[in-house]
Amino acid sequence: MLIVLKGGNFILKLKNYDSMTKVKEKKQSTSANIGFEEKLWATADKMRNNMDPAEYKHVILGLIFLKYISDSFEELHVKLKNDSEGLDDPEDKDEYKAENVFWVPKEARWSYITINAKKPEIGKLIDDAMVLIEKENPNLKGVLPKIYARHDLDKVKLGEIIDTIGTIGMGDKESKSKDMLGRIYEYFIGRFAGAEGKGGGEFLRHNQ
Image (cartoon, rainbow, N blue to C red):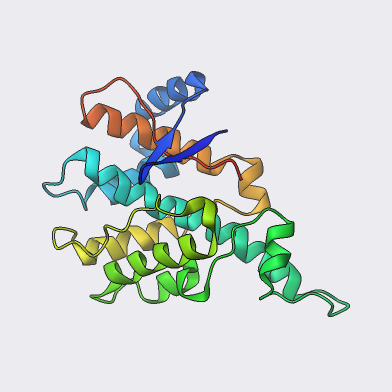
């Protein structure tokens, strides 16, 4: 599944339209069978207020991508930390580069974001996290959204969506095998496209 990062925007090339069909079928299910995608959307949609969907989508997709790369990082971090021979350094950037995993600085890891989710300055902390990630990963430079400190973003609701996203595994091995990120992105793409009055489009994924 291909993620394209271009011009500061999140772009996803939709390749599997069968998945979009399944999303439509799921939306017709009863409330008792609502999937985690719809629950996540319901929480995220509370933040929208009067923001245009074209702007709002980057707020949500940016958080989801941050969770994804942080999950991947944390899984490898734990593995290195628990090395029985004590030869691996969990804070050695080269260890992550060797495994094709983004290096995530401490102040940008999801655990740090979660601890600070209820603080009034959470928007700035997320923007700073995006800057740190770009600095450490040149292939992401200039493409991650830094829009979370803007005044029209409700910081209380931002904290709520962080809490909700935090309950869903995305970047660990098990979640990757289930393509959790793909399921969430394709579902959100369909909902955003509907909100914008469009029939589909391009958003974010990353080939890592």
